[in-house]
Figure 1 (cartoon, rainbow, N blue to C red):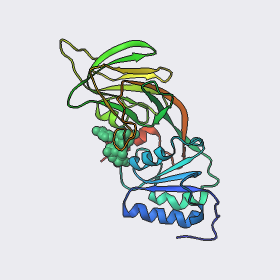
Figure 2: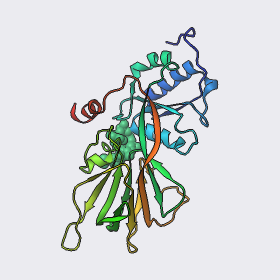
Figure 3: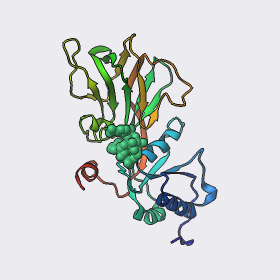
Figure 4: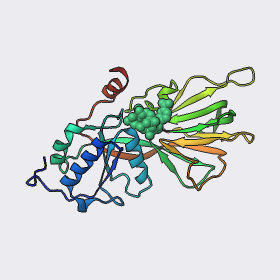
Length: 274
Ligand code: NAP
Ligand code: MN
């Protein structure tokens, strides 16, 4: 119930929802509490995502190139999806609204930075960047810190962050990385192992200071996706991808720390409990 006597807040905010009835109800409630006039999709202090991880990633990508991205506080409310990134359930919202202004504790998620074809512009993702090629396999050389590490031939490679390690990377049998570690992980998608091609066949975890260059062989073509974004669909940048440079970003995404569950508790809840 809305209580008008409760502390009124004067903060700019934006709300992104998964299209569920429950998500819309929560959205309405937040608007009642924070005021319609404070909705500001261009320059919010708080960004609510109501849904699951996909909703959070979509919300994040709306602001990932904002100058003040590191000042925005993301608040993720889970309404029934996996919600690995969610820090709140529906029943916590009333309490949160009472305390939001005084609440100054955050958890930070790091980003991956990547550049295509030596462009100046840095691009960012949170879970992973995925190179793929179907039905023809891609041949590429993978350099670590400028040194050739492996020549790969297969259907793709994924470079994931620690928080992304439980996403696509995990489905490819990559390792789950404790989010307290700062690493990049390279995981193969169907690496070809025969008398002509040799790949490690296991994922490789690298220190965050390493720089990865993936140089696509001239006879191959490759597509990329990152988080839930398909680089090629609706993109005006439809150039051929020949090189991808990947590194760990020093940009930190601020998430409200509220009833925060430890990483391994979330892994257990998401993957082991029925
Ligand atoms: P989606 O197709 O709904 O995602 C597939 C599942 O991955 C959903 O259950 C999603 O949770 C969950 N997920 C997303 N990020 C995660 C993370 N960091 N740790 C654990 N689980 C995670 O697509 P989406 O919701 O837009 O999310 C995009 C991400 O999904 C991609 O970045 C990729 O990591 C992952 N993905 C995985 C596969 C696969 O495993 N085969 C295929 C496509 C995409 P919610 O239900 O809460 O959304
Ligand atoms: Mn999803």
